[in-house]
Length: 88
Image (cartoon, rainbow, N blue to C red; front, side, top):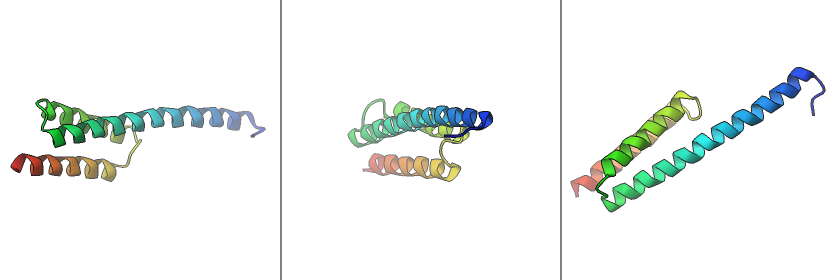
């Protein structure tokens, strides 16, 4: 445990930021799973679900929660799966 006041503040800030990032990542995983399920089942609202998933990924990227290349990879793979299923 730190003894310096500024370091005590940094510990509190780091924990708060970690919780914030954790909630964003958790929501991101949920939205991506919903999009994958919609793609697999050819749901009627598939396009809207995919659009919201891409939006969530971009939001996490812009907040610095995930790396820009990770975001691009996730979006690309989702689009690729959607196009493959749509072509069948």
